[in-house]
Image (tube, rainbow over all chains, first blue to last red; front, side, top):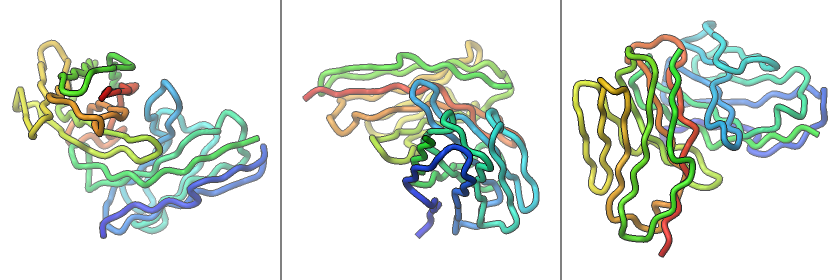
Length: 113
Length: 114
């Protein structure tokens, strides 16, 4: 079954404690991306990757890091989480560039206290 | 970069009525416009999309129209049902765009009252 898998789905953490949200896709997609979703602000892109070892900033990259060492994985790293990073995070993937269907993971609810 | 505005932010209709959600975009290079439906607590899922070489596309009770001159596109849902209740997002991008693949609108919460 084609899918994008994120972990953890739910996490409560404390300010400053590094955490990683993993994302894996099994569709051999070149493109992967992270979005955050906040009430009234829709979906905003954090980082994206066009292929292995190729990453770039989206609209709201501050406070986040990513890596793309393998095609299937695209982890999101919060080196020093802060309360304003409390949000719902979605990983997404698709073939190639704009105009192809984007598949979203199930989402990761992150609370930073 | 692209900017997508979506209206209304909330929409309440009676079951069986039609619902219309409108979006405007700023980048004239955008030529792919998908719509996503997000049920409570779930991921966004593509329900319909349209490319700039057509002005309208239908899929059963759902249709999307596009006016490239005015830079706006709309989602039309006819004969609404309670299961249509969700948040709907429009988005825009340019096919072949190597950067920010999709720019999303702020979302519309649709409530269909039985």
